[in-house]
Length: 288
Image 1 (tube, rainbow, N blue to C red):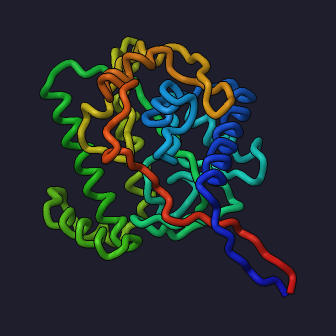
Image 2 (tube, rainbow, N blue to C red; image 1 turned 60 degrees about the horizontal axis):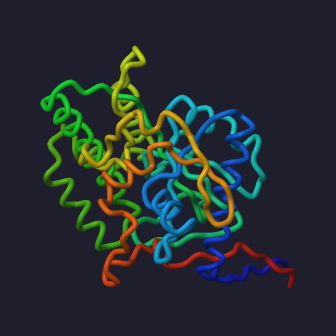
């Protein structure tokens, strides 16, 4: 008879496994001929620390939409079975608008959500689309639509959230401006995320003359935090990350300056926080 045991990963274990996921994404991306870019705090960590930000354990990358869809199609056929790509296209009630590559040999517990499917230590993969926004009015209209998707998602998340997040999600239900708000309590969360992706794709102009990219950071409603100069992502270069060479956008200096100001300056000690994983355990079984 098999008896399950839980062994918790240390902080060093978590970073080693997250790096392993990144390296597997890098390997598969090179096989299928696509670019990815280190993103957000992961990009900052690569530039400032040549690896993880010391007080952080989150990993984010972004990929242009057509290459993102190619990765979604081919990753699980090419990757080590230890790793699995999951997304709203693969899982019912998937709670995010972007893909994750998980380590299937781990089990993850988060404070915010308890998804109803297999879930382990992960790297987030955000798709981005080229956009041409010609006026402030157009930008605000897009932001309003993003906010509606955000509210819907918070409502569908209600079933999988702990009490403190249920209260927050209920507030979103109260202030939601769309029709049939209560119906989202019972819908498959993946449906909203797929519609959200289709909406973002629809913003991309048919001509390749866009001056910005839009990265839908987890249905983040503030559009100014999602828009970047397209020239900054024209090419990929290699940066050191935990002793490995990984892809980063050529305009990383402009990106980080826009996001963080003097990004090489460390924040005050009281603001050095960012650990995302209350508990990560190995999936182990022993014969008994």
